[in-house]
Amino acid sequence: MTKVLNTFYLLAFCIAVGLLNAYTPLENIRVVDGDTIQAEAKGKEIKIRLAEIDAPEMNQPFGKQSKNFLNRLLYEKDVTLISKGEDRYGRTLGEIYANGESANALMIKSGFAWVYDRYVKDSSLYQYQDQAKAENLGLWRAKDPIAPWMWRKQK
Image (cartoon, rainbow, N blue to C red; front, side):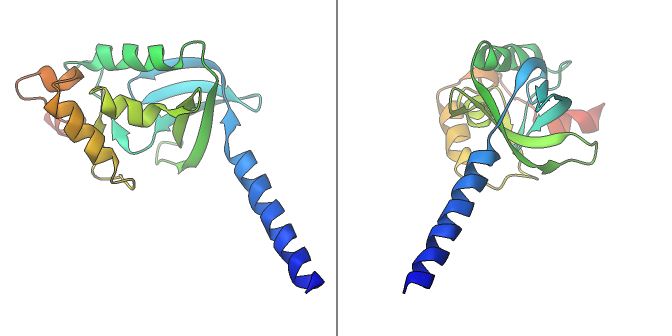
């Protein structure tokens, strides 16, 4: 019985340590656009692409507003990253948290990004997007907003 309990405690400790290390603090953050930032993590400069969302391109309607909104979300906040791997361009894919709240989800909730259909794993993001559409928030105020992946194909 003692051996089983020791194994249980060791496993619980390993999981707890893994979860604690999952959140990487970010410093010297610079917003590139509505779904990309540059920051320092553990003393190293990295480029981070916000996972599961796609914000308007900078030359697209609402592109500048999307960038400005993300900047306001992160400005003078305690910002952390949960890395979800790398994309084909070598950027870190991640969920960004500002004071413990998901910036990825807030970009969708506030109407400044789309759920990136091709890469989405968290289907609850669609509820946030539907709510933002229903309330005509952000880019949903436009008559016929064009998803960034469609915009890029046109250019």
